[in-house]
Image 1 (tube, rainbow, N blue to C red):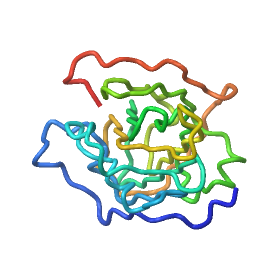
Image 2: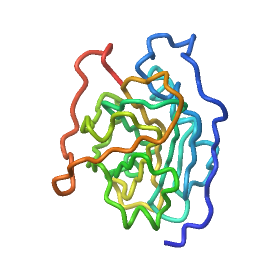
Image 3: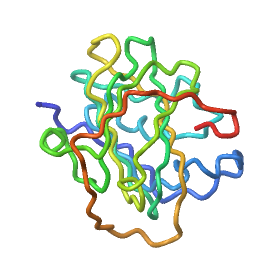
Image 4: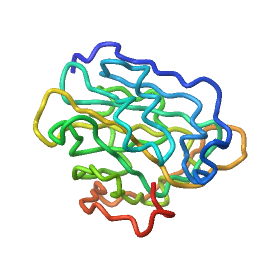
Amino acid sequence: MGKGGHGGGAMGEGHSHDVEYPEDTWNLYQHIERCEALNATDPAASAGIFKPHARRLEAQPCAVSDSDEELLIKVAFASPVHIRRIMVIGGGGTEHHPSFMKVFVQSEELDFSSAADLEPVQEFDLAPNVEGEGFVTTRQGPFTNVTSVAFYFTANQGGEDETMVQYIGMQGDHTHDKRKAVHATYELLGTPHDTQIQEEQGAAEGL
């Protein structure tokens, strides 16, 4: 796809619980060990889109695609996690908000070429999430004991050259086990494709 080597955005060592936002104990950004963005104008900014839920509507930092609308963001966790729900909020005008997302797990070496050949564990149509209230629910099997996850945004709402993402929230649980590869076989019936954007029921349950 000719994306080149647009990578980076390392977070350094793993996060502990955020004392400033103690209500975010469910928010898995605290357990990210490493973050990398491919085809991003500023790869280092991509690490900042994983932030406390209370800051989800802040416009910056924002991950912006570079040569075209595709954007690939990969994270590795300090220990295995269980991802139950995902919230995505686009940046800039709604025409730049992502409209389609493929999610891969246990694929730290994923790039645009391999993403085209591999089947994601789940796909989602995304509606604009301006108010930061919408989320998508994951299939529990593939998203249990996850050591890495990749978010592949392939299109945006307006068919623009730039796709912009200001927030990705992951709700779930973490383990205290040391990080290691988890091997499992999942029975996939075709390509899972979620089209329904659900609304949060109460702020306490929000992503």
